Image (cartoon, rainbow, N blue to C red; front, side, top):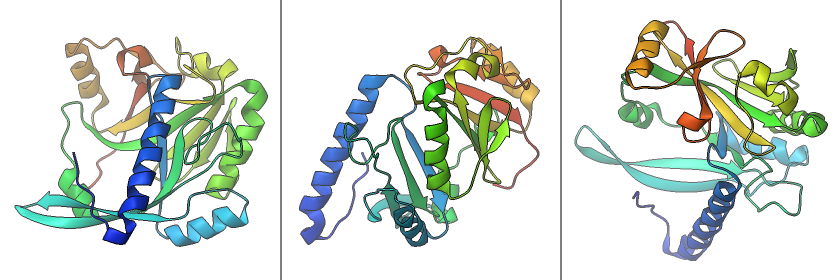
Length: 247
């Protein structure tokens, strides 16, 4: 449990928001087991909020919460500023879109993030890709939504559409092409977040760690190993070789 600090005059509103968020998460979990939250980082979240509003994208405005973080024996307070995008579909809860909770978070203080970063036996050190799958008939609408969310067009990569953000990519793929990209995988619901990719410094070492742990591995169409969704709590985990990165 992480305590949240809020001014007394904001407490009632905060509790209401937490209650609504909990209900949204519960509704997402009722759809399927797996990934349900996707957040984009922004160096200027207020500008991002204004851009989304100008593009006609509904959202719940920028919220701020604080939480204590223990660093080198000292308790510091981290401020987190974020917004959640609302669906245009009236049947979807506020603070969510068809595939789950999608939003924007302000750039986080590296002091706090580096304090949480742990070395992992499989060598993973970064999140570099998320894959969203949609029904082929709804694919163009999904792409248009995300072009509005991120503010620029995607590029084609086979049947997929890709938003390249420099340090990470968002991949949209129709359900008709999912099995080609991730053999053996099917979407638990449409649309849904079906996979994510982590960078590792030594792919052979990651493969060996996964083998020791009894994980059955598949291979993507580009040759990256992945743990199938059925073994990874509902979302496939792809491993990709990357060069040394400063932590």
